[in-house]
Length: 352
Ligand SMILES: [Zn+2]
Image (tube, rainbow, N blue to C red):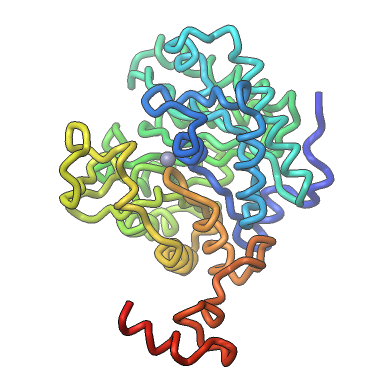
């Protein structure tokens, strides 16, 4: 059994007590775009088949300012592996994902987090379903503990009752628990609780951090965060998708793109969202707005790329390694203001 990463210094709770913590996510979408994950199944097979791609992604996020290397075990659970006929590599995939995260975490001072998520087979109120899902959480949490993670994130869960099963599994293992719910069109959990009621229930059950991830973009997640911050005294997390959701289409699943007429079945989710992506400045604005509400655990979910995370870090007043290459438009060939730029170039901009 590995010990938690002592080289990383303070643990999650100590870091949160000192200020905000950034956790970059969105690995499935980022690796789908680069050709290492299939949209649809969304199983992180790249962990075993292309570990270099996973390491590269972790490293890009570390350089961009992520304080946490989240093990790429989203959907590396028994139900998903069964669906693609690969239950036999379930344990190897989970353990390897954590080791890859650790390799990169140790290049900086990042924490290593285990990750469990929505089971997709949970049926509220059915004891047999609860037992099956709890067993799925238990085995993933067990491997994560064995590999020495610093804490565990349970995320993208739409039922508080399912989230509570994940929380119980994490607390039984004695690790800090971050529990993030996914809220869809109706701004309630699937049992019908407000996010604030749900967050309070999770805090009362022992969660160290409660919040929201995925599904909603910055504009439609932000209005739900204030009530959560008021309802709980623990730390609050917010990790929106990096897409421009609005009141009419509040989730990335519901987004349309009137600017394009060649999208299969006219639903941009999940492979034609490019034109609806948030830019880095919108993520910076979300970071400031969420901080003002009291959110202390920040990240970006599906759609996130390293430039979003760097922007988030810089909005918190930090200069991560990648800030060395942050924009300097004063030296642009045509838009630059540097005296070395020929005046004729600046004048020609009007013609461009
Ligand atoms: Zn997501």
